[in-house]
Image (tube, rainbow, N blue to C red; front, top):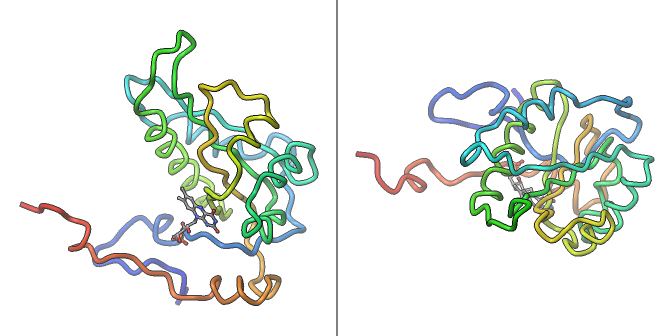
Length: 191
Ligand SMILES: Cc1cc2nc3c(=O)[nH]c(=O)nc-3n(C[C@H](O)[C@H](O)[C@H](O)COP(=O)(O)O)c2cc1C
């Protein structure tokens, strides 16, 4: 029995139950050029408000200049582990159109695209770990993003590694039981 498997009170898709966010990635695993195409196709076909599709991505494979630029903007507690992932993805919301009209659902839509991307990647045998701990202004400057393009999160993706490769404190968190609120705690109304 996989101890990381989500314990659910009703069946869910196996890929959803199996998804979790490791910090130990296999530092020998690499993505060839052009990899992850299906993963971004999954994001591309997510729904969005008025079909505005306000998601943009920066894909950086380990070893590239872009990867180094992203890694440099991670908070220290993420820099401790994320550099071993085969790729880092910056998830960017287009918060206004080219004329400056606000897109109020841009971050919501981006999150949904990232969820699709995550599940596709998981189903292809990869693992992912999203991060909010990074310097947004630093990423914007490093990639010369205009103000309406907001970097919201960064996703580490690759093949899972051994928890033994992590520093002690992270290893404990890697192996700690996963938890969630009960279903009754998140349902405001179930009529
Ligand atoms: C928007 C967002 C930001 C997150 N930021 C970080 C982060 O900076 N560092 C980190 O180690 N994990 C981060 N996480 C991972 C969460 O801590 C993790 O998803 C949560 O604890 C549930 O664990 P699970 O994904 O294994 O089910 C983030 C997740 C999301 C969705």
